[in-house]
Image 1 (cartoon, helix red, strand yellow):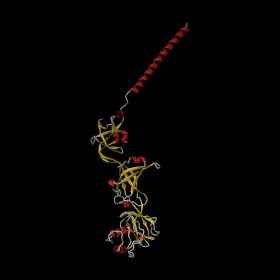
Image 2 (cartoon, one colour; image 1 turned 135 degrees about the vertical axis):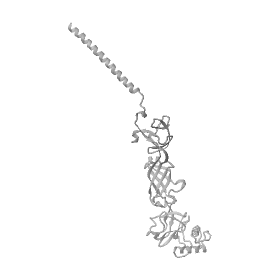
Image 3 (cartoon, rainbow, N blue to C red; image 1 turned 135 degrees about the horizontal axis):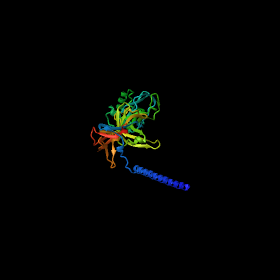
Image 4 (cartoon, rainbow, N blue to C red; image 1 turned 90 degrees about the horizontal axis):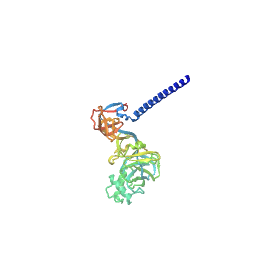
Length: 365
């Protein structure tokens, strides 16, 4: 009897524990479900309400941006005149890059002057009374331009031409023979012109045998370009302004006119030119050495200076419809127009000077 009573009591205890555990499980499941519903289904926090903020004052100012790079300046040389004098170079009369005109002495050979004159026909013979041809006309024009000849430029060397030759020779301090030897002149296509002598050929003490391309012509100005990486080139579209410091410290202005990318080196050459077709170096191109490349310090203006009311760019907020605004210290959203942005600051319109605009606290650090 006692055993039966004990078994009945055990069964009752197990039922009680079963119901207790079941109820506890239901409660736990309910709590977890409620927590999950709260976390998953509740609206996301408004970032403007949950962030900490600081405030910036809207003030007058300006924004601009620039890159500091080197500009390469280099002359393009082209042979324009052939020497026919023979002997030892005894003096050099012109410097590289000098602009020369009709009748100027370029150098001396065996103390005898070699003179430049304009003409397409190279010097190929002696010219004296009785000589005819285009080379004679070129000589007559040189003598006319230098004030020694007043006759017709007709390509026929008569007595008046011979007399002018002797007067010209006397002015050079040489024997007035009335005969212009082949090596006395170097004809080049155009004068006045900026030239340089080939320094590997025409050097004091060198011996000339005749036939050397001694004179090299220069264009009106050297070529200017900026070697750039792809990222730098992207910031330099056509029309970008470039300020170049000349070798003598002058400021030259240029604009970007184009770009050419070298696939092999993975670099871009940005071409420059002067404004309105003018030379970048104006009338100061002689500052650029004629030989080799010259590296000139330059400032590439990627964002031109713009003045106005300035705010930190971090204060700008964009709505879903694309409108841009700032939020003031009364939580009012004020639509603005961005005029220019650079280096974390923006010039804007639509907000008053002295206003306080909100920006994330970390952006002010």
